Length: 229
Image (tube, rainbow, N blue to C red):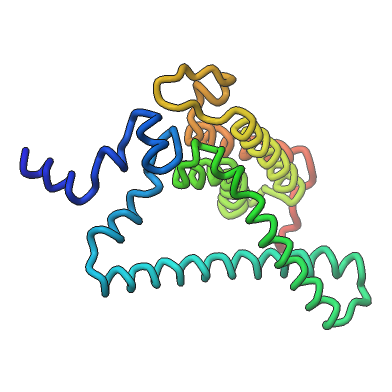
């Protein structure tokens, strides 16, 4: 047991990665809540040999660029084809291409501006931030998709209002998270009960159930979809 403890300490120093004291965490990584963000990079930089270290960094950069290009391209395409083209039906291909490029640049600028907000949400812990945002935005889509597949009575009106209700609730919880950051270790959690007593994963389950209820209610109160659909 003692040997395993020494091995873990050498591979992943707990005083840095799992620090508890806010002053120590701030000294190590600049975040008072914790330093979980540096765990994987610290292992890659300090544990792997030079060749594998460069390969792993190249893989991480390639995965990052692939994800970002997919997001930017999809978002700009959705705006250009679904919004701008409806506003300007006579737009030619050159105009649509230029609008797509401008939207991409704006998205990149918005992403840079969003970094301070990301650092303040969840105490700056990237993994918690990603999981929390997913819990606020994904459940409505999941509920609508599952009901559309397994319940033939679901219609467009129910799906629309279910998505709107789920999005509103998810954004409300996300706004509260941004307005009331997570307190650091040892500080009493005096945030509203929706944040302090309801974990974001539990909120995701409730959000999914609420969205499903709205979809069912909206579908039952409106005409059923055509039989050929």
